[in-house]
Image 1: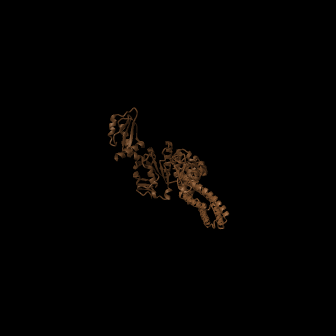
Image 2: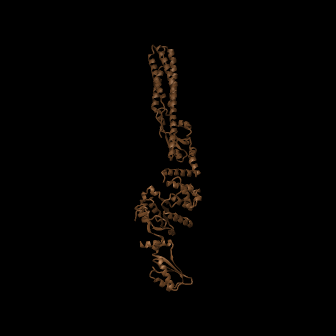
Image 3: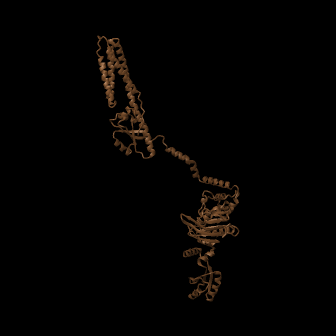
Length: 289
Length: 324
């Protein structure tokens, strides 16, 4: 037994292993090419794009966002393909069960109330995936796109509201200006100027009234109490404006008429403030599934 | 019984009440034996009787459940490198590497035993001994089963061990190669080595110096081949054969039965041959010749009959069953 016996043993094992490997070309090939082949297989199997999900949106015909959903659901993105808009939840669920669709997106009936108070719409997403990996994918993608839809609906609604408010605000500013000229004319007893501006105020107010009436006419656009408040304020305004209709050039003073004009101005100014508040409202929704 | 320290004349392998249990079942039960140096000890028994387990106990691969085993005076489970280097073991199944050549396998075995790098001459010599030198460049997977057994034997004895444990070295090989193997073993024995050879071929007992007969985990007996024959039949067997025209008559048969040194009744094999059991054949044969001649019977031969070991084995097992 030599002193180098342990080294001889280790060397023998190493040599044996090397010889065995080199005598098995297939093993050698597997050892070298195997990892690359695995990478290649993974590469072939890997898809950078997720699978496109077929979604059916359930939204009631009476739902104020029905039309908005219908318009914009088609353009959500490549991974969520809206195959239809339905009003029948049972039918949608049946399609989901039969795998005709991958997702059912349920828009709540109380959507407008939520929008009015700048709150999130609770959109429910139903799916029928059992495979945990697919379920995660469907839930994530569903959440992503319904969130997008949700944000879009609120944003769009607010934008419309803002735009409308902007136009009315402009009319209001014009009306205030005309009322101020009217008031100044009354103060300086320039009755002809006052009469001309009274006419102008009348025209502007009629225009604003028309626009407001349109808003009120839109079903569900305003709360009943809000519509009622607008109507009562409009009646008061009418009364004030009517009292200025027949200005008598023979009057000694126009103090009473000037007070009415000031009241009209004050009323319109407060209206401007209200519309400004509406315009500053922003969307900040999150999705609930 | 000595402690088996391998000293001059003393036993090199000792087992005392050696037992091994697997799942509460005895594989080896109370085996006691002593093996002396320069002997071929045959360990004979049917398949599954506990031969391999005994070898593993003696080599320290298994720890005994009861009893103890000593090799070179050292407990087999506490054998040091120094003692282990003096032991060679050939397992029952081929355990070499099929993708290495004959030479590489042998070289690898030599390395495992820690043999020095200048061992080429020894390897060549051992390959010559097992007639594999010309096939040394062949892959082990491409040589015959018999050659693989010979290579296993060469690998077990490459480091010139004093004791060789050979576990069924002749199992599954043809009779000619078996004979060749036994010639190898006898040559190794003549070199002074001790061989512990297990086999299920009972006939191979004839090649051994001493034999242990194993049945169902127990060692039935240990003796020389002749001793086993005697033990099986209770004495020596002698055949008396007459010329073909000289038929044995009933009168002769009766008179023969009355001879005092005969054990049991004579057995008529055919009309010219009768078989008798005696205490000692060498002393009984001259008397038998004299007796037969006195009866005017022309004898063709009177000689000791050596029954095949298959029959001896069956007799021993039957006797053991009757005793137990």
